[in-house]
Length: 387
Image 1 (cartoon, rainbow, N blue to C red):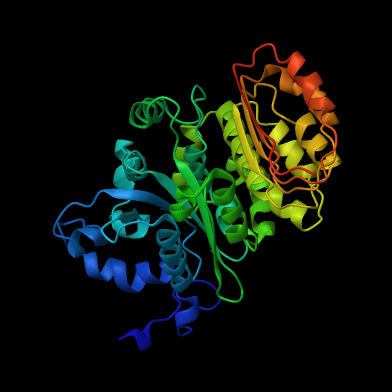
Image 2 (cartoon, rainbow, N blue to C red):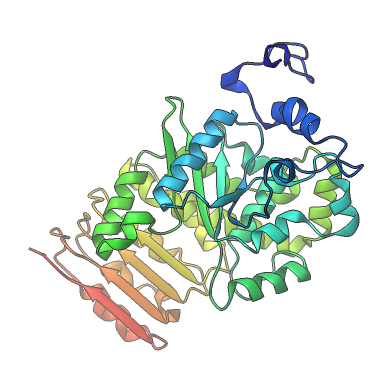
């Protein structure tokens, strides 16, 4: 039967499908809809006919449907391995979780399945294709923006805001991981914080292991996230975009765009420095996110990190930043003169690690900065194995 499957739309309509390019749009036409048609008159979701019991998702998957399904599954397998997720754990995937015969029902009732699913999850896994299409898709941008939620900043409907606060509790937010398969079929996963075995290691060791694991991630794809504009993003169904824009007022769209840009800027920072590339655009993205209260970055083993790189970061910290945690162990820093910059005066917590930073010879800037931090309530400094 599969050898008769073909493209049904576009310039290649009628052309035979190939395994290496078979995606969720193809699966919906040839597998999901035929298998679920006729149930309960309006059809049902694929998961309803595959499982006898209700499944509670642990991770929510956001993707554009356009990536090859084989690469999609490789990303999930690698993600589950890195996160050490149990075999019984379930991912929420819209193609199988939603009734593809009657998606309009959610628009009519306003009770979106993604909202209910996301409230159950630990985090969101964003699966990218080779050109970063999700950054141009309205639903993907909206879903991922939920994972960049910060307490006190409303970025969606009042109902969603209340539910997020109740489900996540004080200070908790959804994690946001990113997965992609490169041109050589190698899978790369960026995790939001330490994952799996890294969490059982000593702090600096775990962060170093994470940096090694993520060093080959195609960072240029993440840079596309700096240009996210939900209002300009595309949607397969215009009714979906209308619903999103209706429930996301203009000022909240701006918040969401800037939060996403700063998140992906921070995720890209170390990689760009390690490749000797400019981080100016990252600094601008972070500076523009007025909702950001916490920044945590690791530059472990980054010998190319110099004083001017740290100065750029410090001078572009968001105005309302309260917590700054930087691991600068085994880096190329020589002085801390830039730390006396005004942006640090609003901090309530400062955590700096300089283990093995053998090029560091002056910390006078730190002394001057601490004298200006009148609001500082917690300070943690690590100076180990210095020359």
